[in-house]
Every structure is written in C-alpha cells, then in structure tokens.
Length: 419
Ligand code: F0G
Image (cartoon, rainbow, N blue to C red):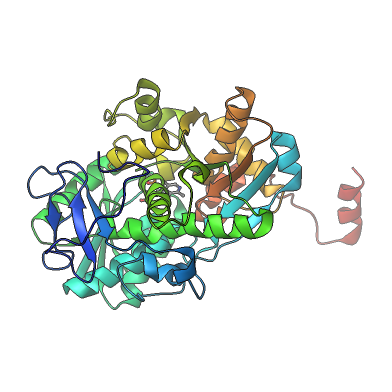
C-alpha cells in the first residue's frame, strides 16, 4: 500500500514539475501538479497526495514559521501573514494532574487568524495563484472560512464560504465578514456544505480550499515538523504521542505525511514516530467508530451534535489518509463528552492557555486514555490545541464565571470582596 510509514521515496515520474507531482493514494495514478485543477483522481476518485522525489532532511530547514520548511513544500514562499512558529507551552500543574511524564501544549490558536488553518492557506493560496484562479471557496465549521477570507484578501482574491447555519461560533463569522468573504449560511450541516462546494468546484465556479485539496495539507505538515524540532531541542528526544482533535482528519493525515517523509529522508527512525491519537466529540465520532472496528474508511454520520462546533462533522473526507496513520504509528482514537471538553477547556485556561472547545478535546481525550490505562504514566505527550479562545466567546462565557455588577463606589467593591 502506498501509505506505509516505511515506504521509500520514488523517482520523479515524467509528469513531475521540479520533483513534485500528485499521486492517487488508491490506484497510484500520477498527475502533473499545476497543469490542471483536480482535487481527486480522474480514474478512481481516490484522494490525491503531493509527492516529492527528494523528501527534506532537518538540515534543509532555515528561518522561522511555515516557510522555514519550504524544502518540504512545493514552493519557496507563499501568501504569508506570517504563520506558524506557535508556542509549545509547558503546563506543569495539568501535567501532574493528568499524570504523564511530560505534557506540552502546541497552541495553534496563536496563528494570525487564530487557528492552524493558516498553515494550509499560506500554501493553498500560493497554489491558487500558480493555477491562475480568481475565486476561492470552502465549506467550513468556521476556522477555515476565517483563514480563507484573510489569506484571500491578502492575495487580492475573491472568497466564498459556505457555513452550516446556526452552528458556527461568532468570532469566526466576524472574521470572514470583516475580511470580506461572501458568506452563505446553508440550512444543513458542514458535510452538506462540503457536498455543495465540491460540486461548485467540479463545475469550475470556484477553486476549492478545503482539506480535500492536497496542497493545504502540505502546509499543515509543518505543525508536526515544529513539534518534533522544538521537543527535541528541550528533551533530546521526540514525544511518544501526539493527541489532536479530529474533524475532517486533515491534520491527522498531514502529521502522518510529515513523519513519513522524515523517515524517507533518513531524518527520523520509524520507531521514533509519535503515536497519532485522535479525539472526537461523542456526538460526531465516525473516525473513532472506524478505528474501533478496524475499517479503512468511515461510515457517514448524518446526524451530528456537539458544543465543539469546529468538529461537528459526520463525514471526515481525509479518513483514508488518516486511518493508516493512526494504525501504523500505534495510536488510537477516542470520543469524549461535551462536559469533558468544557472541563478540559477550564483546565487549560487555569494554566493561562485560552482555547476554543474543539481544541480542548485533545486534553479531554488524553485524560480519558490515562484513566483507561491506554496512555502510561511514563509517556511524553504533546496535545494540539487548534483554535483560540476568542473564536467562540459564547462557549468561553459558558465555561467561565459570570461578571458581577457593582455600584460605582469603593465600599460596594470592598463589601463584595469580603463576601
Ligand atoms: N480543531 C479546530 C479548531 C477546527 O476548526 C477543526 C476543523 C479541527 C480541529 C479538525 O481538524 O479537520 O483537520 O481533523 N475545522 C474545519 C473548519 C472543518 O471548517 O474550520 P481536521
């Protein structure tokens, strides 16, 4: 199978452009990367992956942010705000409470628009320029739309976003709106928005920048590269496990691809690859179902529900790329309740790390796996927090304490403080 952790790099085929090509993960058909617009295989409709004849080594990286890793990307530079270079927070109290050897939080909420999506968009919008398209589009639970709107604006391009009406957090719509995306609120869930926008893309109306677009995942690989480099700097070793929230499974696929390419270039031993561990909300957990049943793809959930609206997704399009990653790295997937997500959001906040609900799912999942004994107390773990607290102010108010009204008077304030 083409997605094995230890599969060697291939020679560039005739269709390659400067050592870069697209390849179908199902049938192996190869395509020129920038000649025509395609998101899936012409022959079998399988997912496409960007391939390189010379995968990058650690020595190839210099500079900061996403484009530090341009040797692992199809371009030298892109439409940038700039993005990446996010903190790997220490959380000593939470680490002791969860009971693992090491716990670090990779806070992707610190990207320019407040989520990891910026890493994919800086590459995706660069590719859009290469292809000469002028209207960019996505379906979104919110963060992709905010990133697309900002990077589209930066690149001087028109943007269209389809959102599930009533299920997108306020901060995200505000971003898309101010960055001047055309916003259509669809009477349906995220998966139906993606069905529509995929059809628009197939009709040539728009250039699709959902994670079905293989170039976006190239940018998101840099999360994994940053984690490994920063962790190694601090501990002289790599993390045993990376725990991340899962929606469309784009990040899971991207991290797996980053690690496979490092193994191909001889930069990382296969046994040092962290166990990829996905977390979903109980009400939207098709990946957990697939992992538990040993399936190669997910079954579409038509009804989904969770307070973590960012991952309110029933049909994870990248499952065929992500499931081998979870399996081959020895990872797993787990579902958590909305209540566990809110508790984890409070735990992170108590360490000064402000995240939106979907992000806190990673920590909630780690806690659950510790309780169940799946994760040992000797493990070194990185949890990914994917979006900033301010993305979803309503959820933050709900999880936090209410403001107390007080008279405009020092005695009234002192009275309250002494209560
Ligand atoms: N966390 C946050 C905050 C997200 O916004 C998303 C996805 C995920 C996790 C899941 O990541 O899809 O790579 O597994 N948000 C998409 C959006 C769907 O439209 O913003 P994934």
